[in-house]
Image (cartoon, rainbow, N blue to C red; front, side, top):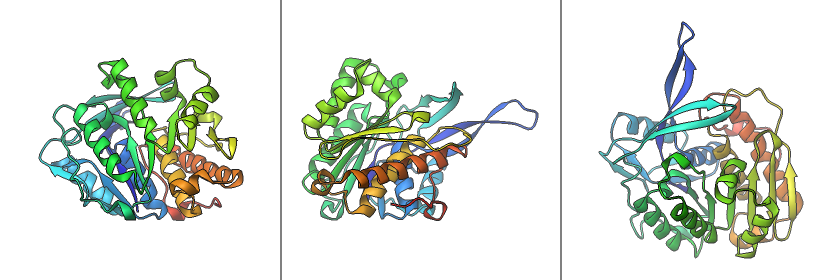
Length: 311
């Protein structure tokens, strides 16, 4: 099984009403839930850990997860309200306004011993859940239990408008990176975390501390990855007509984890031993899945029947 831990929310994505004025429509989202949805739709047995409300929007989230075959038995259901995120597209980038005080995403707890990690190949963590103290603490406890047998995947998926103390946040992200076997971040995330530092310099530092694979996605410029054995690999982004980029990075992450799972390379030692040709195929698969997601509005990762790219 593959598991994603983190945020589940409702995105209000931009659209137009009948007379052409700006409007929004609700769509299930949340970076880590999107990753779970993406992995499950491609065919991996998948679970989600995090807070899901029992309110109207929480029921939308639960129904969406069930329809995509995501197991929610590890999630914390509560009557806290659902996190809401309003999205605007500015110069091709998605910008978010979050309504996240006292929500189910902020008020969840990891039930120690409740997850059979000997049956979990990989645990993915990241995004807005790690901004608040409780979410970060619960995720650290989850990783502590998982790390002995499960590969740890991390995507910071930074949301600067939620960060109140940047130095503390940077230190926290560094701590999660230190526990991760696979780190993926966008070029925008990289700039927020590391400024103008060269990609390769930071990737080398992360590999040196024990991470096996570092990936940076760069929108239309594709993705570049560094691996201690396979070296540096770049893959192109597909040529597509973009509806929006909401969920593109999550779809990439989901497809990469799924590809490694299908290749038999997701376990910690087998990920360390992956060949360059295998990694290139996995990254190309992920880039194409992200591209397909960009052709339709909202976070809508592809299903296996929509995918024709070979692994």
